[in-house]
Image (cartoon, rainbow, N blue to C red; front, side, top):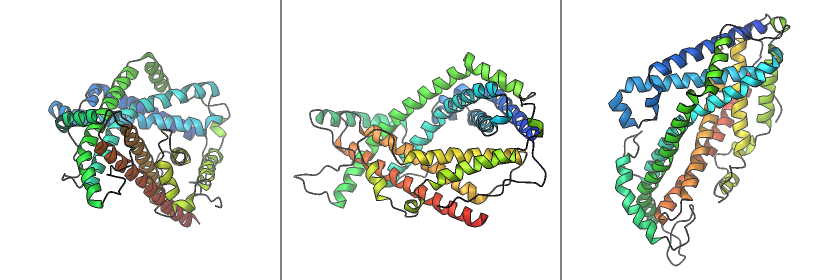
Length: 391
């Protein structure tokens, strides 16, 4: 695929120098400090409670705490991304020390929300696949998990002496293929138990992520990062030549890295809504990450870096490109679906689960891998429109 640029990286006729980078970094540092203050004022500890607990404690405070944590991550990502793209204009020792710390903070704060969103995505998919009645956005509560736990344990005991059924294999008798009615019955029976299992596992992971985030926010490591960001809000360690150096070549290099990475993607394959080769890989019992997902995740990160570079050039007022936004949203859905599929596969490896539960998890896993392919198709469509719009 021929390399083509998204948009001209020259937003004005004038040179954009390191002073614009300093102003952008100061603004993001200020946003970071404001979000940190709001997070502390609204009691970030409430973020680890369940939805029911947050309701009784006060939704407004909990939502403000979540919004503040999201703003913290957003500012940390933008500072870190700008340090990466424009690193020749910054003090190298300071920049190389700051970037990994910001990445650590953003990743740590994002885990809790990621587990919560993953659980909601998987439970909604189970509702859809099993035909269970439920309102959009409804999730299986802890009460449901408790009500099915005894039955699940009993079924698991009966299957304890048998070999676990592979997640993608429907139980059948005498080797005969299961009919569509039998498959629907197996899925309906296993869906509630699979949902309860996923809720237990992902809620536990979310609770641990919340504890880790609280420990991180109270650690000396975080306070050191916050102190450096506070200094950054007033003083940016630019190199002596930075104030007169044009930023546009560095922004263009970030764009070129993105287009090169996209050129390496199988966009021809992604141009079809069904990728049988990817589905075969997705159904493999190998627990390692899906071999096709890595390059797409890398493109998502490079697209984010490109967006941040454009924000610097446009002094934080970068006009919204709907086509580029659609491409980014498709890559976000790709990431979410691939991680949800991995969570379903991990749950299906739980020892001694009932065959119907394993079957439901297998169907759920395949469904999320199809969502991955749909997201790739959507990205391909958005990217082709982007190229046509830029030509």
